[in-house]
Image (cartoon, rainbow, N blue to C red; front, top):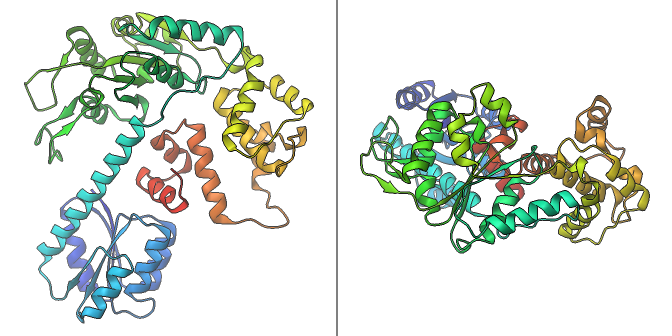
Length: 444
């Protein structure tokens, strides 16, 4: 369902429209003051805005332009009693979804809102699917003895069909290891689907993995394929499997044993073709003892375990990693020896992900010159009081709020390894709003 804002200087119209949409399960807010509406839109994100055209300034067209400037994915429907061809052309040029001529049939409006929500949901599904299948070839960077052992294990197991269970702290690169296994396997030309199991509640995770038939549950208005089917003959990577509820673990165990599954709401078995790789950042023995990870499920997944050591145990990997991150930026930056020494001495609780954040920030602060110790700021990354205080300081030359928002979004995405749901949580916004802000700032 959608978040909807209604703006009309007639209270009766607001109450009528809000009542109908509320009964359909939408989250609705309304106001008779257009200037108040601007303040609401400044501080909150809505999926749909329904506004009257002729009001005391700002009028409907001004609100439309304001919405499209700050939240391009929000759809705007204009209501007017004074329709004309010129009005329609101007509204559509400014980005309106459509307009309604008063008086109109309320069913016409609810049908229009339903189409908008369906379109937005489809777009969000497509984006999520592209993200899951994106990533291209893996880039494993490291020269240490511990990391070389990981490479050797990948070389041995990649050509097999054996399930692989990857362990390691958050940020060490477990998904990169999974992608490398896929890239070196006979399935390399097929999809690689990565699913962060901790990002979904139990009921949603089950429908995402298995898929469902139309009418399988309330809200299932159409058939949807799950990750098992989307992966096809490729590779399905289940990240953070220790966060899957025990009841869903039982169902997945049965699929792994029988190599068949059924969509929710169906009795028709479907053959599982994908290879399953999985990972967790938790202590496996502890998760089993606490009954968060079923032992039989774990043993079915971990025929071939690979442990990725934390960055603090392989400081020799830091120089090539730093060089790799700077090369990705493409601006020819370098690091002074003292700064590199500091990087190798740091404990890196966030591992490779934290290192990449630190290098990117230092490269910005260095202004294109070689990175020095003064450009490094571990406190702000580790989250201590001094670092948090430094993040609140406004530089004498001032700052641009839009640029700051874009930087924070990029930082959250880096910190969560590209997990949009987790990044949205860190930033205190909905996932739909995060996609909207990413679109505005051109963040892919």
